[in-house]
Image (cartoon, rainbow, N blue to C red; front, side):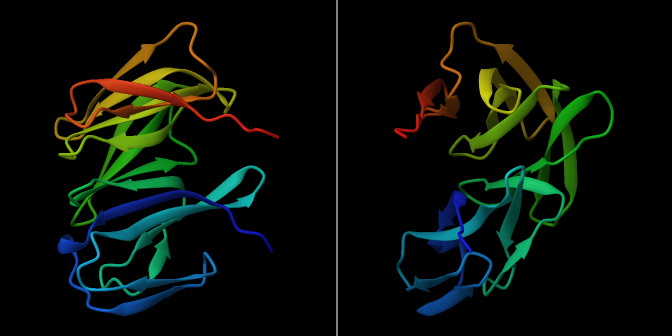
Length: 187
């Protein structure tokens, strides 16, 4: 059986209370070797389970295991903790959405784009207040981006002309601008 980790998100180690431990992650067929003082810890990951599905896992509150968030294909914890952006497999109505979970587990669903478009590849600002997602047509061609304000629960979609279809968006370190990058297969 092959495993592909499609997303690995980390949060500052100072936000977690673990000292020199090994965390067995059977869902990913890995063991995380963590030590006090590590600057980062894995808090979420996704893996491909079939050609059309991914499973998304979030670190449990006790820190010793990962729990599948059923119904979601991608999870992205905010850099300072406190929120997790989740991309659901399906959304009610005519729009797709992103779900923002707070630290208590309370969910806030925010509309992103009209179906059949999808908003994927969530990326937080460093302060965890805003999120950008890449808009995809046909599940693979990027056509723009959506900015989510996690505090107010609002979204704004922007179409971008002549963009490389393999592009995705992320915030600049200061959170004021967006940068776009492209990953192409060399196969």
